[in-house]
Image 1: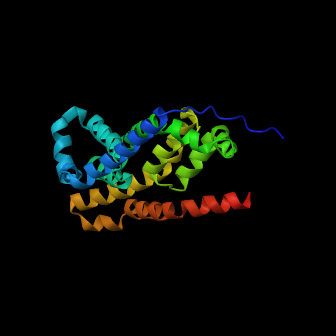
Image 2: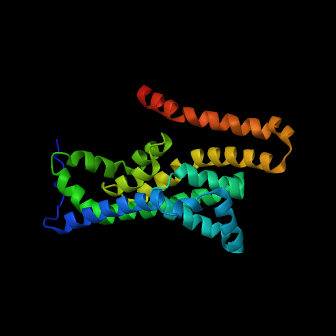
Length: 232
């Protein structure tokens, strides 16, 4: 049986310094969101005024805010709900998906740049086979974790610490978040349209029932995937 090849590990203080910078970045990000006025901007009314003032650049502004928010550990569900409420179920889905992809890629790059060398020094040869397995099956691993709703931001940074290829990470993420993103934005965006219109009879429309059904179905997706995986 072929033994896994040793992982080239960089020695010295540089990997440790980078890892400390990563920890400092995460602490600063959490502190910024929780204990500064930034969190006051993450409200539909405030963000809506900002985007309205952006005019033609509103979609791009929102996608940039979403990407930065992901890197700052702002909950993805909050950002997605804001996008759906402001832009509606369809355009909201497109802008949310694009912003999530940009944020996921940026967080991965931060984790890879600052933490990979230190992580590799901890892995060593004993756990090398697991690290190599992630590299070989990167797309499938990322896709599976996205479909079972593994915590979005933690996975973005965490995958950067592994040997998964960036292209596998991006493609697995892009495909894996489509279903959940569409269901959530469609659900929130549809309810927002009903409330904004003031016609409460629309709560009994097919579109509302369909969005509620999709949302309920999304809650069972992880269980369905896990059951299918066990049967295989």
